[in-house]
Image (cartoon, rainbow, N blue to C red; front, side, top):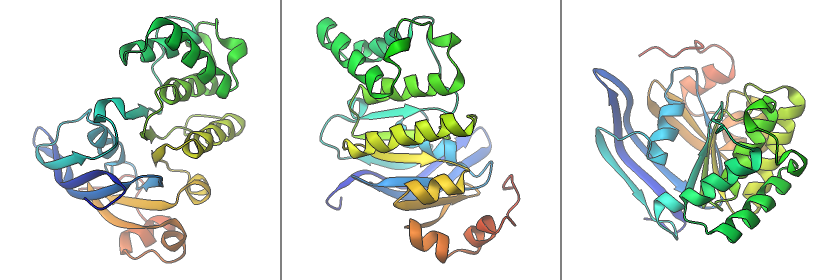
Length: 240
């Protein structure tokens, strides 16, 4: 693999029964990047992230990891609607650390630091499931950040949030990247993608139609599908 490449996908195909969700995906995730994954609803963005993270097993092709630590301990993922356990906000973070092998004192220290980083230390003892959607998403980010992942996948992290909560999530994601984590994020928010991403991966009908530097993608997309998407001509749900 080229120097700096954390994750490489070659010829990756995903099927759910007779339905082929991804077709021959080739993609390199380079360390330090902020990658925005764009495409219409149904294009395969979420399936792509779940597959790269290891939650979906490909029917064909290969995914190769070359990060500094074992893949399972180097990656984390935050979903559009985070799952909160029936325990406090702080205990949700501690649980993730426990699963990853952190001992008691270290686990408590790391969890306290993570919840402080996302500005929710004052809600540490509150039941996580009664928090607002924005607060839950910040706890999910703290839970991921506490693991100090090399690579973080974010699936539409701001789509269900009001503008103030979305801005706070965007700020935290920027801090996670600044601390050294590579970010791969799906979003329908083109403003967020323009502000955040160094690189755009455009997915259309289960294929990677274009990979480009963000400024070039938005100013002069190379593919017809990407041009239509940016102009609002592409159907909201991509047919296959």
